[in-house]
Length: 417
Image 1: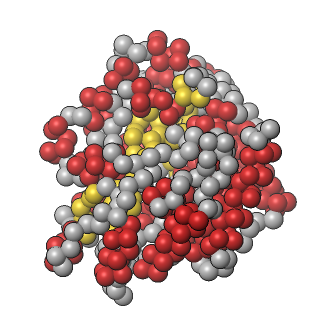
Image 2: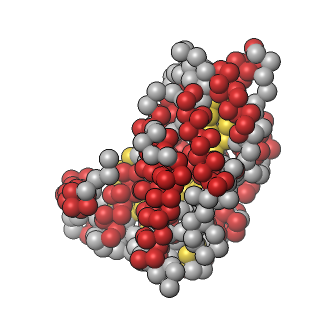
């Protein structure tokens, strides 16, 4: 159920108070204040946080890691209030557009050039930096490239003489074939906002015409878009229990605990499938490009708050140290390295068996639209998609409602003037 506006505003004010008073460590005297960092959480980012904590001798870095939607929400609250309670901010290729447009981040171009030789920043190709530019200025130092790829139980496929699906139609057939009381035929992640957008992105782009036309008018509710979400709805008939509230953590766990047979998941979750401390399916999962292509391509890294009272050079050194060549190589099993020399190192393709799947997925994947308001629109897009999938609304009516709400939002921001 959609939260009433007044109740939501009250909730956000309360969260803001929590962020300022307890979640974010209060400022002490400037010379003694620890550096405050907030971030999404997954294994690679946990390693980067560890490197930040030890980046500069004598400098305390308070790293706060949490699920994506919560990190984005708390960062938005702090930055929109121009609070100095954050210094280093996690940003993805999509959230950086919103943060930069609103003036919440510090441009990094001068610092990038200043420390380019020391940290070999020329190893980041322009194609890897471009998603973090807004109006020509760089706002994020990349730490990962990430891509969604097909995770599937190769042992089960081999036992049944099946090949991984090349199309969504084949995926649907195999989901039905493998579905049983023991294992879901498809692992779906539809929790709003990020996970739900990821799943819808695949179907809307692979089977539809994408999200928008060249004037930012929604097209996801046209005939092909409706058919795409109808297909998603049908496939969720073979999904694991709780798919409507499942995000990356829950879906990764579904594979690890032998609950599901196949589905899309981030490359950063691949190595955990072979971790005996976490997984019951070690050596049983394999990877391929998303059926029909067009799964989400993303990336993330760290930015500097425009409102920090800390020395920007200090903060940039912390960020750059956590993404240096040595750390990227150490983290290579946990993510897709954005440094060209690391990503293309043939030794990693030999060492990590999920790398061929990553390279195949990169050829067909595509990012979210470079729209600063995309996650904001995603709040109601994902909820309308869930209403359609749950049968609470007809798919066409749900997508029409989402398109109308998206147009209202973008019109209020001056897109159609």
